[in-house]
Amino acid sequence: MNAKLGINGRFWFDALDNLRIKHYADLIKQNDNCELILLPGYSHGIHQQDPDKVGKSINNLFKKITKSDQLN
Image (cartoon, rainbow, N blue to C red; front, side, top):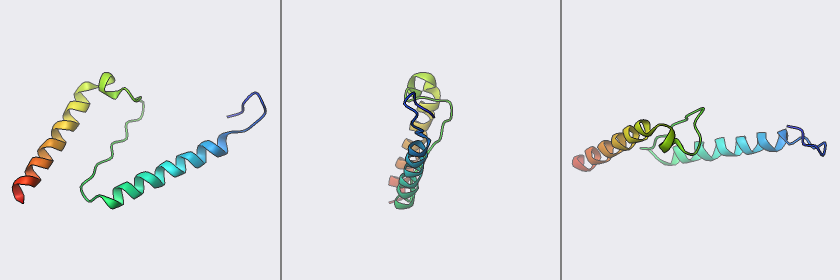
């Protein structure tokens, strides 16, 4: 990415991407029962873009949690 000022920002975007990857990897390592869903092509408004996908994900999480509670 080259701004009109002649500054190449690609280095900063790559560094930010690597930081995000490390952050999510650390979150996953710290949580035995977690789930990370990557949704290429979606924005922050996934609940409006694909409400069925969001609803199914919430229902699956609810089932997993209630099943876990019954086992304890």
